[in-house]
Length: 451
Image 1 (tube, rainbow, N blue to C red):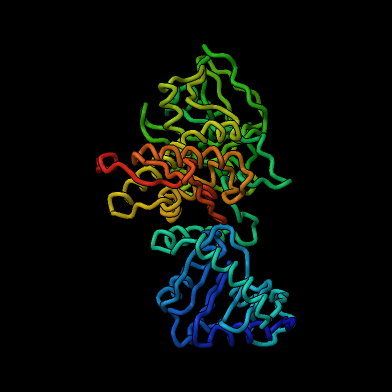
Image 2: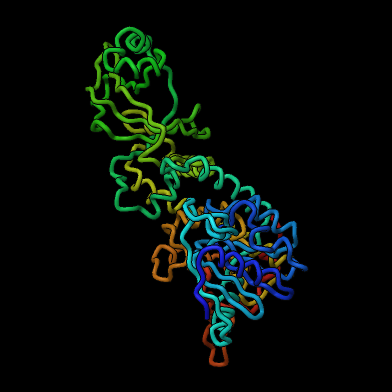
């Protein structure tokens, strides 16, 4: 066994990877030029390389992964992978180094901003077998990278690169699933409403008098278009404390799609009374506590808002809001919407597998694995269960998984498999989203006819 640091890590990794024969790699993050740096580009038969990464982390360069796939490398992605393991048929390297120039410098560059990495290299056969067994489990738990993964990964990669150095490395919905100690969600509300015209009196106030409530710098940025909400005098005074941040969504017509209008903070001034209405002045914010919303998240939130508003028959409160609630409370209200979408897609996927002649006793597991290849489904699943998609003790996950299994059995007319004692057979699946599922003995062809 050897302890390696510095340039020696890159040399040994490259030596392992360039050998003929099967090479197994489980390394979370890949940077530009990694194929050449690690020696994969010079492997005599790249199709013998099996590689697992975390493509959808935002820290993995999708262009480099695409180039590896073009070389013939078999690439799979595993959510939340953080390992760094390199294996030939003789050697293993386990340590801290990702596949990037910062982690694997190929020449001594002391004094530069390279990572300080350390790994252990071994040829111990007992250890090798343990690591090989671990790798096979992760390979089964992962899914093959497809075009949809690459497109989604490109968006995540760009967002991460654009945010470098400013601390905006997580979107708001990613962060709320795994809040850090400095995150404060009590100051965020979600509002959704039908767009209406502004009164002439409000327009005149904004044009002639609103400037007194802003600094000269703010007013210059606003260009005489100060943001505000307007309320009729007939309703009670709308009061949210100064500094509350509003995640603002609106629709152009009743029942229409909702559009995200940005983050707005209530200004430090009272509701301003006019003759026919009151005004609440706002400050536009570029983000909430450093967190933004991606286009995909915006689309998902808009769909959830529409479903919730529709379930309320588009009734509004005194101020014309379909929704005006604490964001965390909204997430709780949103969960049933996400759950319904997840289940419906899993059931239809199970039906498709049956129609294609791919039914087997682990139909529920296979349907979920197929769904997991869809980044949008995986993203919604993580939102629904609080982000901990592989945690066995997550009660939110258990409720969703039980519902998926039950609905799939009903959706395909499934017959539960039993043992010789008449007890139902349960399949145990480690390192999967669904870690147990009921085995099925058969299905009803009439139940899976395309609709």
